[in-house]
Image: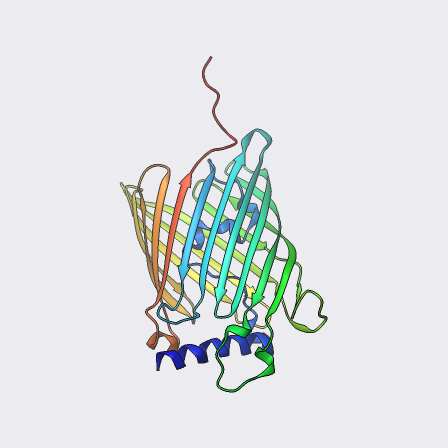
Length: 308
């Protein structure tokens, strides 16, 4: 029974790709701990922190389903304080059923002072994706010519823009990480049009509060809009204790809810975990979604001068 269920699930994913574009509109991966992973969606974030930061995220969605979404990402961004800009790069792997994409992107942000409290990061993102749909690996009940050849596009270049307004305790962001709607064909030589990369627009905001001594509150929100898909809205709140241990909850309207915890191991090292449950009928067949995050602050380009 489990094998049949997983086969049907993979066939459904392939059918979404081939014949139903509205269902496949949201192509960028989602994160529960998005507040620590803003570089993926907004190049204006690059270098907005006081130090360089490396971030690793592993996300397994709908655990116990073969072919369920899995996402891995690594990013690094750092301020170049001497010249008032920031740099960053990210590597992303996202797989769902037979669909697999790997992206490599670089980010640049220039900072402007806005009043006495805020800075505005104006960012550019550039890079490319490798894309593949391994349809020949699917097991079908009856032979179907649709699944006789893989779909792949080896090189999908793209670029994006973003603005990130921030202070010590508040941030706002607006970004479009991919501006080019690349067409996806069956191979590099075919003109047969299967699908295209959709434009995603992101708006984020967050605010930190000191409740009482040694107790903090962080609030975060994210709105994602894509053509031919309903908007996705996330709201997250986390309570912190002595700025060392954080625990909170996330709510994604009409989709899922979850819980997350983060522990500041040292002043430079942070580890986080989140667990999501969906509202859909998939909840009856899966064991939820797990996401692990690890970050480490390391300054490569802003080494302090030694005293003479």
